[in-house]
Image (tube, rainbow, N blue to C red; front, side, top):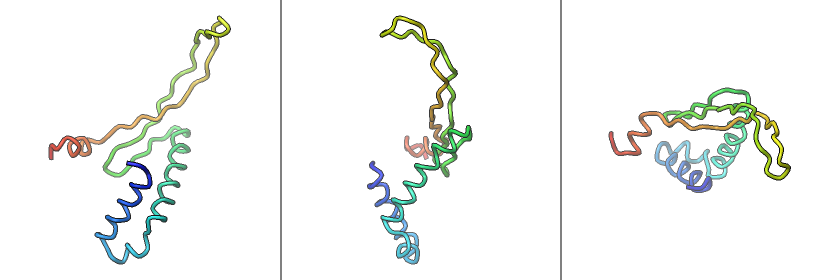
Length: 102
């Protein structure tokens, strides 16, 4: 599912929840919200904090320590700086729904 498809689906489902909300929350607004979330999440992760997404799961920062590697081009060993990766951990409820266990 692309971000545009996600925005359309969220907007469509909000129409079902409340007609009052449907007039205020358009697909364009949902796209802006998703874009803002995609800006905030990396900032929070780089600060070393977890990002919990409702009942879906959480995104945690995983720090890979600085390490020495062999550079094939130069034939020498070099130190590579530490990196931060994002890892998603789904909650049990999401796993159960995905596997039709509920």
